Image (cartoon, rainbow, N blue to C red; front, side, top):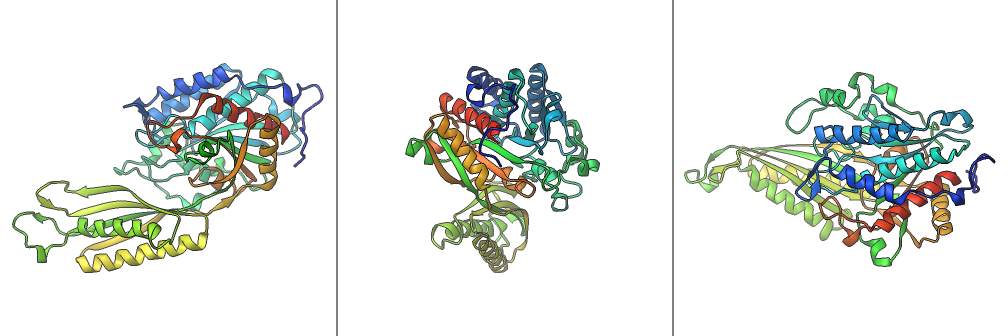
Length: 424
């Protein structure tokens, strides 16, 4: 990739273009109202609020003179009319996701999509012509908070169709097919939404850090060097329900006791045994959830993360063996399935260097760092060079209502994204 801007002579200088910071912040505020509740935001993938939020962003794009469409996987794609006419290289894709976890933050994912929209509008209003088309994307169901198929949209785009269930369902057994259709997608036509390797010059994702590093170091911009690997495991435990007062302790088949042992073991794997960087049990369902009844069944989800794929494999094997031992001791039937497997990914060195140069030219202090959270970029890396830009998270928190980033930092990240697109 060239180090200097590949912009037609009649286009404005890359150094003269600036993001409309006021418009960026206003759009983030307005989007946060959709699904806003209890101080946070709930726009779980393919929910009514998510569909409303995506339609809202699409309308803003059209009002800005851009085009908006939805592919079969449910991904929102925003383009400049006729931007492809001067293309001699594949497009540059920029964006993130619009869905959230339950009662999550207002910036995670959404910031990257709104900033991408701002970049396209800035280029469009300035009449910039480059040798590649720039496309903004809002990936569908990155979080997997309602439908347990996280990274759904990026997996479709990257062609990982064999890794997706043929008839996905949400946690309550409702089909994704209908929800996807309401969002403008089509489960029967997913192949039409795939992009082949080499079909993109690069993918850039701007995101809040979701951790404390940049804030602690006093840096405005993070240049991401790698994205953590992740294994998500779903566990089902089946015992025998019984009366809490009349069933003797030595005759019980209590799946919740087994679940408790497994939860403790998962915690120990990361804290004392150092088998992986972090290990979390983030969802537990107990049936019947009654104070005077021995449970009949328990479902829980386990999240393992590390930047070393070998360590991840060892941690997964340890979870499976520990579960088998605990279930046998508790006379409980257990099943376990690895529902998500994302390999660690390193960002592209040339894209990294371009981000760093852009930040330096704009006068922003920067830091190279890994991402401890998973992102669509690690999936898109299957087919294209990827880069990620971080901005600080106040107190290092995310996925919660108090998720915040200073307004100046939000604008700075969008400026670096714009400059990087121009330099590519």
